[in-house]
Picture 1 (cartoon, helix red, strand yellow):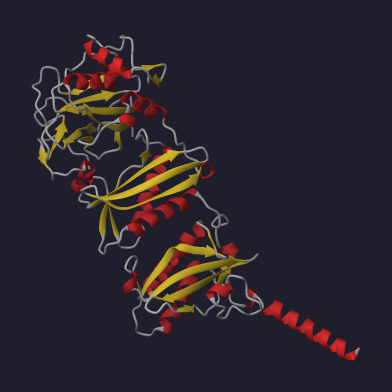
Picture 2 (cartoon, rainbow, N blue to C red; picture 1 turned 90 degrees about the vertical axis):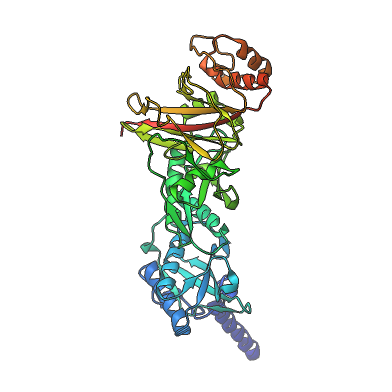
Length: 488
């Protein structure tokens, strides 16, 4: 009986020791270091992430006196208890670690891991009061591991309450990071960020404006891999200017602005998610990097819609454009630009082969105005390698922003044959769009008949030109730019 009691007591002691000494599950992967003490509260708690990161940098510097290590911080692998979570805390932690280690004399290598001394992985764990951060260092040359030995934790009360929950900003930050990591060459890249637009109809919305602004901020805060180039200032009308011939015309804005790459973004709304996709291209249209992110609709507080622009896109039929050989832009740049009261608006036209061009302004009411060529002006094909301004320097007219303000679509048609310019009257019965819907039945018949009509409705402009191109036995190219005018 005495022996049984002794064994039982011994087993209880072992059980107590095992429970009190057991590290959390994530510690087995990172190594326990000095974290195998019985309670996190026995360790000092840092007052800020900045102070914590500085202490980590000091530990690594003290362990490598006089050595300027090259580090790679795996931003895509910051986890909470082994679970990858894309939350603002991860971005906050990344920024502080990059700042602290750079200040300590270490450098970061984002792409060529062969030149890196350590790959840094990060894990963190929350208790009811604190968050503890663990760094694991992988030596690239021999795949050996070491862990930071200090105990690094801070009070949750010192952090924003929502920093451990996903939000729109953290999603956009993750998207920016993924695209930036796709740039796999050394040296800074001068980058022009163009407005994010709706994928199918290419218009902007309140969500577009917010996302574009955030992306610019994100890329400007990245390390020296990128130099953000602002859009070029508005230029007046001018004579045709020489530009580098290129199969991809979208690089023109970046080239004029002094950038060597352009970042384009589109979004597409689904039932529960919004997919936003970014593509980074060089000036010849080669894709340097791309990434996309699905964002739950519940995280988006900005409107994804732009009813006026959507109506304009319907009239201009932007969803079915063949824009391979032609591009219309503004002298501020392409996509979606805003002009203020009193500003002068000028458009630029560029082609990839000799083409006749016809430029129209479309307002939300379906009213159409021919901008070029003016009636009676001689027509001539525009040539590749030149950037044409409309109005041109020799023109006596200009486009001045004044009330009423709003949104317009400027539509370009181009063909290697001259096409007849239609007479337009809003009183003519429309054939293509009726009750806000574009007809899909017998479209070829409608297009053929529109060409033979003496007068057409402005809503029929696209189908008229498609019919005219078919009648001439040529291909029709199209391009649209949206603009918005505001009082201030």
